[in-house]
Length: 361
Image 1 (cartoon, rainbow, N blue to C red):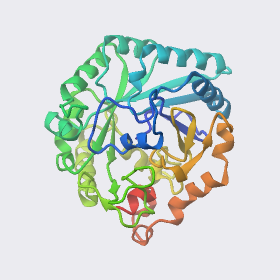
Image 2 (image 1 turned 180 degrees about the vertical axis):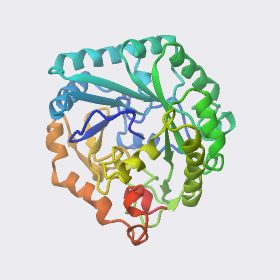
Image 3 (image 1 turned 30 degrees about the horizontal axis):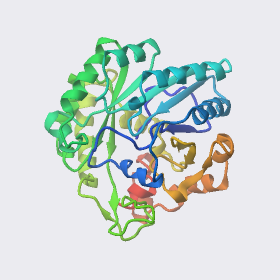
């Protein structure tokens, strides 16, 4: 749900979010848009990315990146369910196909499975870890529960402590939702207290349809006119108030000490630089998602049958990225922007939300 690397390693033709466990997760977060993607792969018993898919992905992705640093992002689902040996194999394959390039790895995790062994592995191999945490206990546990509907806060905090003990680099990803959006300063102070030096605030805006798609999906894209915004989605004005409240504290006390992704990228726009975060770009299509069995999608927020580009076992990753279908997808963000957004007087420095979010807001 975000770009994990704190410092961009230079322009790349495209980035890929790898989903090595597909939608398989040990949590059952109320607002998660990805859990229902199981329905796209009925009958699947083993969600782990197979060796042939993994090797093909690593080889093709490195080959497709012209810059000397190649960054891999592993997300889910919950990627740590694969275990440390699986990631040791990732490192071996990356070394085999590195072609003299420096390889970086980032893992987005809910933090529940993290223990001393994981922390030592991440530290030894310089992984950057993104931890999903929605604020203090009562805010975090409101939506972020396990499969038994039990709270997860204590387990996440233990995981963070293991990372800190091993000096693992980590940042935080906070989903701003209908509940916690009214507590910006409480959340910001909490994130500082647990040691987050780089914060991502992601608004959850999802729409539910009364009649599921043929695959059984109920959280659908902007083309579904009858969809209703979910009751866990953040309200537009409240999300703005949330960011403004945090900015007022950050700009007075924490500039240069704490980094808030949205503020950094806004500054890039004001300076006339190319935004490093895709949601700020006028067009998109440069951040794709690869599923556990090699299916490549236009974006990890658009894992729908109509946005499937193909499979990397059949066609090269770079070729799929260059298809007209993907280029049209990227342009649609600009061309299908609602009139309300096109006429906005702060549009040049605004977040250019994808159609799925813009239409809902």
